[in-house]
Length: 333
Image 1 (cartoon, one colour):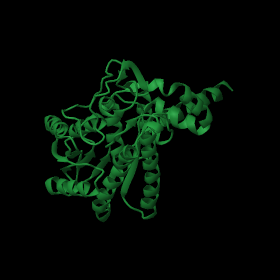
Image 2 (cartoon, one colour):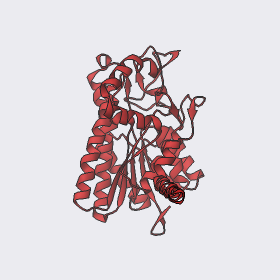
Image 3 (spheres, one colour):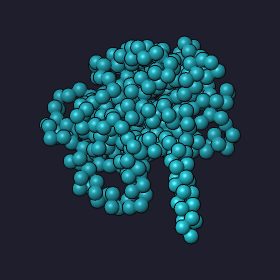
Image 4 (cartoon, one colour):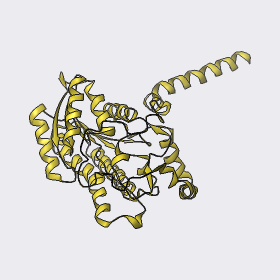
């Protein structure tokens, strides 16, 4: 897609792997010029190669999003290379799989700094550029866990809850100011990404996404769609709807279910390797791509996402069916 005849300029944090990597590919298919922000040079180079092979252009910018000065420097570098930023996607994350009693304070702090404050710093850098121009879209990559905390991921859930609150506050400020800078948040289900290979874990068995598991390309399609149709929120997958709405209706019931099933449900039957490298403080070497180890169990489509992105069509069909039913009843009478 182009803006005023020029390719869109997009910034993606966490661009080296997982959802970020899949989103790079999705924007590249549209010919976008993309600023790639992440820590790992191998993954960044892979993402740059992907973007250029698919018809886009990209600049790799090694960045720790927990450092606002690094984020600001990266934003400046993107605009110097490609021009004004049109879309900023905050996707970078990290986590710790452990019960709260087993998490060290500095580990909890690091998860919050990357997963929540990284999105805050990215948003601030985007606003510095978008507000004077009175245009642009900021996409927060959220999760069903922005609404419902689960066991073993207290730090990550806290970070996503904080990001949801930040999103609510900023969106209303922009609306009050009649700004044409738009905010949207995409809430994701369990995804087949490499994070389950490199997140620090204190679990006896290997970690896994909460089933059912979706491929990261579904999330990427939702993010790109949301960037061009800035609805308040986009829920991806039936599990996301079920989790968020179910928690609003019966949170105590959700507590009991998660207490019974939430810990075993986030582990496979394979013993964990206690010496496995993790990315909490430093990136794990190598290019890890978009997919994790669960291709045989992950689905690559979501009828709920289709419905969410085609609700005007569905509304039209519903109105037509109601009208048809009314006409048939009138004729019978």
